[in-house]
Length: 148
Image (cartoon, helix red, strand yellow):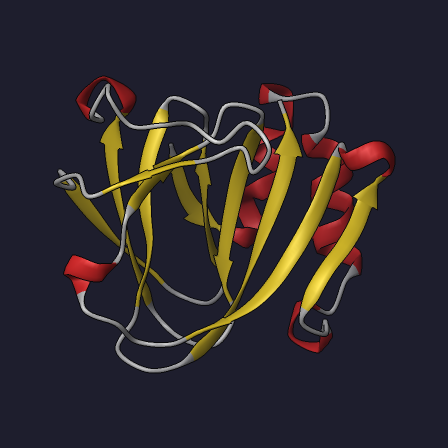
């Protein structure tokens, strides 16, 4: 897991061969102007963005999740979002994984919480269980999905 400011994203390009294209896309794109929905960054599902509006909901209703196929880069656009993290080894082993959706969801106690503000990002790798979406008011965010 990485938590940093967007201006520093390029420092992490050596970690993954597709991160350079993501860094370039982030520099060239007016993130606040993106319409809701999916936007391709690289062909063949190698990297794309989901632009979402999220609403407040109680912490107990927000499941922890992890992915096997994609890395998540989560970027709040208009409000502070609390995002939880825990190592995959702490995730319940009996939870069904949806290969089609590339996700396992479960009620699982989150160990650590981050406050992520606009202008910041968090990278969640497949070994990172995360609990995104804890907000106090509605806001927009983007999730960059990068094929690992």
